Amino acid sequence: MDPLQKLRDDAVAIFHAGLRAVEPAAAVRRYVHREKNFLRVADRRYDLDKFRQIFVVGAGKAACPMAAALEEILAERLSGGHVNVKYGHVTPLQKIQIQEAGHPVPDEAGMQGTKKILAWLEPAEENDLVICALSGGGSALLPMPSMGVSLADKQTTTKRLLACGATINEMNAVRKHLSQVKGGQLARAAYPATMISLILSDVIGDPLEVIASGPTSPDASTFHDVQNILNKYGLAEQLPNSVQTHFMRGVQGEIAETPKAGDKIFMNTQNVIVASNRQAIAAAQAEAQQRGYHTMILSTVIEGETKEVARVHAAIAKEICLSGNPLPAPACVISGGETTVTLRGNGLGGRNQEFVLAAAIDLAGWPQIVILSAGTDGTDGPTDAAGASGDGETAPRAAQLALNPQVFLNDNNSYRFFEKLGDLLITGPTKTNVMDIRLILVGTEM
Image 1 (cartoon, rainbow, N blue to C red):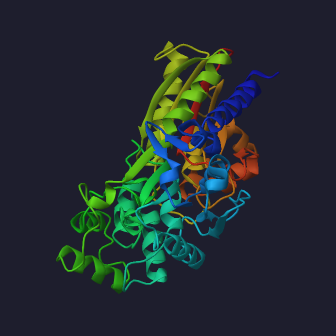
Image 2: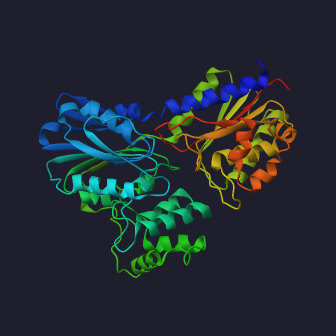
Image 3: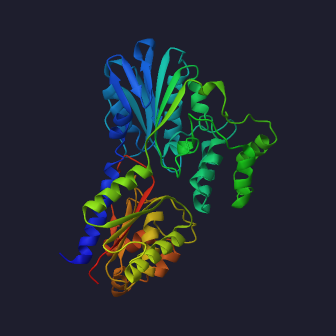
């Protein structure tokens, strides 16, 4: 086999090994076990005979397979429930209802689904058990705007946050303060019932209050934080009037804050991270080692502007070629996390495709280097691709087709670039979501 093609094939296989490690149903089963009438969740044990009803609610790209695992585990004890999922991310369920809805921009279907979730929680009593399945995408899939704010105004706010390059933490701080369910408010709705929240993390560092905008955990962010974020990106006066008014009233103390640590509503709530980017990266490393590569995990907490992060990765690849540092070839350098793209063009793409395009420009003519970057959810930005792969021949091949990589990069048009080269990575919906996996593979044959 051609050495470069082998590197490309290995990169795809290593990525898929990372995906398998964070399959949602398996992740739930690792942490949730039923022993007759007892349910063990991580380090806690629940006597099921003490509960009148047990039901499941949730939201996110992985909510359906998580709910399917819970249906299997709870069996006859499950009363029912409801989950919101992104369009196309459905897994058949028996007792739990499903609402497909919009992501990353919330839509009316998501709001109707959220109303159904709240309808399950409203009559919950002290002797009921609520199990919440949350994953990345849950923030957009649990839209219930604050009083006085329309869904359309919240959609506009979300779109502007996406376009300005705000981090996921910043976006969620804003969204929590425009919601009736985020930032611990879903736990408030379930109180006084016991709540177990099972969570797939798509956020750097796995902070409970940020994943899916933390609907079942205390919220440390405030209206003042939101004001600072909007000022940072110059959005304070670009948002709909209803949103501006809502935030102003919050800063002035006229609207109650989200629930904070120590609130009684969290006394009977258990939050458990069942899968994360770190697990996916570790599995990818193990697969690379089995394939004979020297490996290094660069970091699982990488964020920042995509193009700049890509150039750092490209520089590491060059250094491996030149000096054998920080590890000798054959080498596989792996990183995780989630970068951001500041939109300046009118093209189509996502952060992973843009990462590969920027790196490929810097690596033009360097032999035996392959780069791959993809989202574990199978979707990169507003496209049907999970990401893309490239190598030292990407830019030269593009030149033969009269394609200028820099022009495509400047227009944020990475999808069309890799579409023309046949280098998109398309997995379809993976029904999991633990941020991104990025790979650099350096071969020995130059």
